[in-house]
Amino acid sequence: MSDTTSVKQGFAVGTSIGAAVILVTVGIVQFFQGLAAVAENEVFVVGIDYVYQFDLTTWGWIHLVLGALVALVGLALFTGAAWARVSAVVICAISIIANFLWLPYYPWWSTLIIALNIVVIWAVSTWKPTQTTHAAAHAPSTPTQSA
Image (cartoon, rainbow, N blue to C red; front, side, top):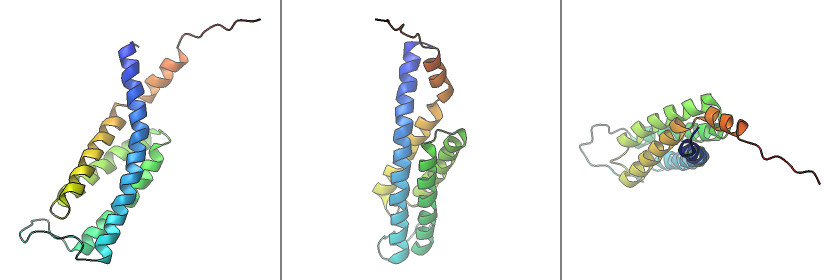
């Protein structure tokens, strides 16, 4: 394995831990966003002619459930398990779609979450834990000196 590949994998591993933190944080905030939409229908305003216009209570429940799932997958991503990485990519794709549809209600937040989800998908999909552990196992060891 070349030094360049090792550096890229090290960056991806660090970003994957960051991705887990981002997922947990986004999930919690998205949960509270859904709670705000369910509790008070006048919190968010949308233009009159929006194609995907649902009742804000419906959008609130969508964000409540999605936020809880995103946070749980983020916690699972800390384990580094393959199923957690696949789940993270799937839940981020679903979150991208939901936040795209949510754009007219809260455009800056939706754009930020879409961008963060893209970063998480990149981090999780470029991380190859088998190469990282393989490189560590086959790294030249330094002989210890006996006194």
